[in-house]
Each structure stands twice: as structure tokens, then as C-alpha cells.
Length: 118
Image 1 (tube, rainbow, N blue to C red):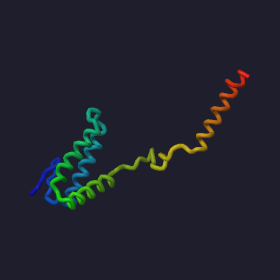
Image 2: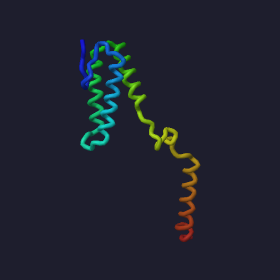
Image 3: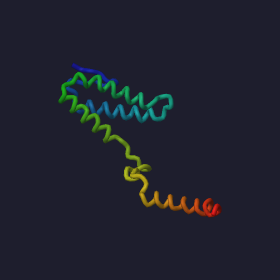
Image 4: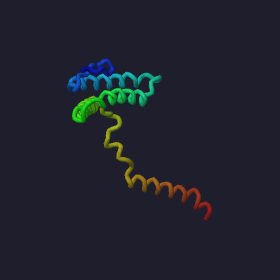
């Protein structure tokens, strides 16, 4: 028994190389879709995941787990690391910087507003 998703034929249970090929194809489609403004990426990704879900709901629990482990693993492996926005830069602002900014604002307010009133 075979099933077709996006032009890929899958045996039941699916082989690992078939799942890897589908994940690579989906990643390539997403990369191509990024440069087309008429495509809404959220809907596009949901459509891909819906086709995958419709296929996997016919599989046994163990085959489904194996499919998603391979599919998601391949997508994570293909993911690009963003050099301009590394993960450690998302830590937020330090408390020292917040208090320093508040102190500067307080000094400006004191010399510009409060001192002229007194």
C-alpha cells in the first residue's frame, strides 16, 4: 500500500529516506515561498502540516512517533542559524541598564522641571 504526499510516494510504514525527502522538499518550498509576497507563510505551513497529519493519522502509534521524530529532526537539522540574532542576545535588558536609564531621566526632570519650580 502506498500513499502520495506532495508528489512523494510513501510505503506503509514509511521508510526513513522517504520522510527525510519530504522534509527537505517542504523546507525548500518554504524557502522559495519567503520571497513571494502573495503567499501567506502561516497558511502555507499549516497546509503542509495538514497534509502530513492526514497521512500520519492512518499509521499506528509507533509508526507515527517514528515518522514525526524523523520529519521534525530533519527540519531542525535544515534550520538556518541566524548569525545576526544569536540566541544569547535574546536575554533582555539588565537591571543595571534599567536603573541607569531611570536615574538619567530623574536627573533631567530635576534640572529641567523641578528646579525651575522651586
